[in-house]
Image (cartoon, rainbow, N blue to C red; front, side):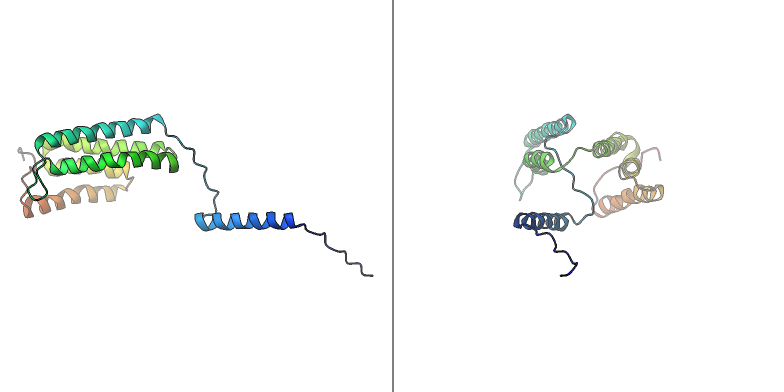
Amino acid sequence: MSNISQPDRITDEQVQLSATKVDTVDKESEILDSPHEPLHLESGSPILYRIVIGVLTIVALFLAVYSWNLGIGSFRKPAPGLWIFVVSLMILVSIPGAILVKEKFEVFNIADVSRSVIMAAGLGAFVLLYPWFGFLIAGAVSLVIITRYSALETWRNTWIIALGTPAVLYVLFGVLFQVSFVPLPTFF
């Protein structure tokens, strides 16, 4: 007789359980392709997200009514309110999808909200500065706020974008397409 011992017998249940675990791990690693464990996402959204969606809905409704009062016209002969109306309808149609997708797939992140607020502040700065300082200065200030503090670009890239983009847009629209807007303040 030999001194080699017989291996313990493995039951069918153990084989099935082991195969199931391997299949599950393989499927998860194929889907995620990441060494990290997947996050379990809770459904539901914070109150701030609901407020943002509510404000967006109110703004879209206001723009739809405002553009309707301006006149819609047709696509062949557009009136001043046509494109505002089209954009406001696109926003209104996308809101239910945004609510469903957000609650199902995303975790709330305050950094995303703060970046959106910074972008809105940059656009607000443009709106406030344009009447007094013109397109080029207002655009540069707005883009400094957005690129540096929201997009977190380096100062070098911020200045390149902030000074180059308004200049290129002015040449494109102001010079080539002859759109009338004030490039610089009148006291220059």
